[in-house]
Structure formats: C-alpha cells, structure tokens
Length: 415
Image (cartoon, rainbow, N blue to C red; front, side):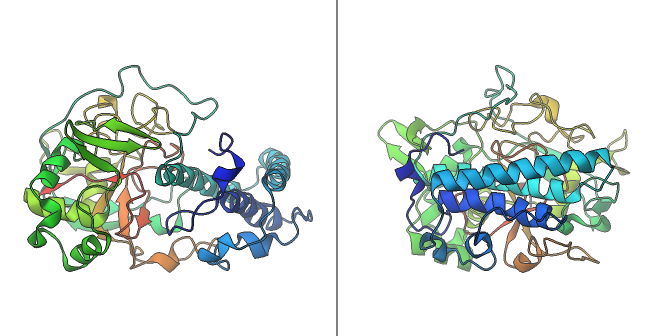
C-alpha cells in the first residue's frame, strides 16, 4: 500500500480523515508489539519511545504531524523486527496449542489499516494501489453484470441479532446473539447504483431542504456539497475521480463515497428508507421456510452459507481494482436473493452504534468499541478494499455520519 510511493508522497497535509503514512505504518507495527509481543511476555525492546509516538489513544490526531517520527527506513526496520518476533512466537504458540486470540486481533487490526491506506490514497489523489502479492483473480466478467432491480420480501419473526459463541473470532461489539422481533419488510436486492444516485443529484436533491434532516442540511451547507465528493459534471456527462484518474461514471456500479446524510436524503427523495441493522443482518443471514412465510431459525455466517468467501462470491481483497456492477456475483446471493451483501461497498444502516445487551468490554483492546458508542452509525458488509477474513454477516463497522472517504454506499427498504 505504500511501497510505490515516493518519500515526498509520505508527507501529507493535515486532514481530518487521514494520518501521516509513516505514523500509520509505525502504529500497525506498534499494535503487534504491544498487544502480542509484550502481553505474551516478550522482553525485546524493539523501538525506543514507541509508546510516545504510536499510541492512538494518547497521541491526538493533529499532533501526529509534529512528532519526531523515525525515517522511512527506520520505520520499515521496526516493522520488520516486530514481524520476525511475531512469526517466531506464533509458530511456537501454534505448536503448543495456545490461544491465538491476540494474534488474530492484531492481524485484523492491520487489515483495517490496510483498508484505511486505500481510502487515504483516494483522498489524496494518489495512484491506484497495486494488487496485493498473491491476490486471487476474480472471474473475467466479474465487473459486469448490469443492474438488479426489485425488492426481496422478508418474513418477520424472531431473529438472533449478533454473533453466536461458536468459537469463531468476533469483536466485542458483536457479542452476543440476542432475540429481536423484526416485522416483515422489503429490502432492495442490490445497492443503489451511480445511475440512480445521479437522478437524485440532477433533480436538485442536494438543494432541496425538505429532503434533508436538520443535521444533514447543516453538514451540506457547511461543505457546500452539491454532488458526491469525487464527481465532476462535464458536457458529456458525469465523471468520477478514481484515485488519480477521472473516469466515466459507471452507471451500474454502486454509489460509493457518500455519507449517512447523503444516503438518508436520497431515501427521502426516492420514498424509501435505510434498513435497520437487524433488518440488514436478517436479509443477509437468515433462511426462510420452503413457502417463504417464516424464518427457520438457522443463521448463515455469510450470505451464501458458512464457507468463507471465494472470488466468485464476493468482491473483496482488492481482487478487482474497484467496484463491480451491482448485478455481478450471483453466486454470493443470500437465501432471499439479496446480492453483494458482502463486498463491493460498505452499506450504511439506519442504526446508531450501540452495544448489545449484556455487553462486556474485551480485554486487552478496551478502546476498540466502547469510546464510540452513540456517536457513530453502523455499516455492514464490506468493500472491494476489505480483507475477506475480516468480515461476516455479524461484523459491525462504524463511522461518523459525515464520513465520505470510506468506500460506503447503501441499499434501501420500502416504507
């Protein structure tokens, strides 16, 4: 994610949604250092002063630009030393049958920051990131597929929202599955497309006060937003900035880089609504009886079943250099015929990010969820930039409602 960048590209302006590249690299290594090596008893002191540089809960965001950060070579050397120690300890732990929770925690934390690097490159107008070594190629026609109209009818009933304690790694905010009553509803089989969102823009959707919430209108007015952040209108139609290139807007790809307020305004314009988190997860993971009238009570880990994603089922792991059409990946449909509920684009839900009943903070990473409850909105699914091993139907992403740098889109429900 950074190897191709020149040294001067590692120095970035102070922007709310990015970090200095060298700080972010050092922070990822530091997380392994603290939450794996030190907690498991390592005596190695791998970088003097690391705690004063890379602890994200003691070093404020804006202060990261004034820190005496190690050079690129020193940062990569620190990362390599941490990597070697972690691999050596992991090999011994696996042989001894030790609990690998901390290793998995640090690995998935790194995956989140790898995705953040992609967002940062898009924000800064840097070139498209190179494919990861060993990335599995998606099927040749995966980017096509066209649109996918219509709603799936979902029967109501009691649904177990959240993760089951079956031994799989989950984050504390997914714990634990608990019954919720969900009335019958209809949810779009696919995410909102660029063409659909363009119709909203061209109907003066950004300028019509009645479509926006009070907070959404304040956000829109503050930033002068009149269209999605990376869109440009020309005589020949809409263009979209894709990293460092302007490309024609792909009509059947999902709208991305829109925030929660923009999604909400579109829904008001279209006479639709955002799904709740429970509705989204039910449509992705539940199974109906043969007559479609009730829920069976079985819950899938992924929309298609319990087996991990393949490149034929979901646009994850940057196997494609961007979003596919919303009609692509039919092999990844849920039991109700909803497509791409994992991969392609994160999807905003109507729900605020709150703990589940009986929530207990996981140690040692106590700051993962608890500081953010009540301030953020829940997103579900995953984007083309997301690592497949990170996500499942119960995974909960969470961002402030004004964030547009994320690869976030949405699907809608009938009112």
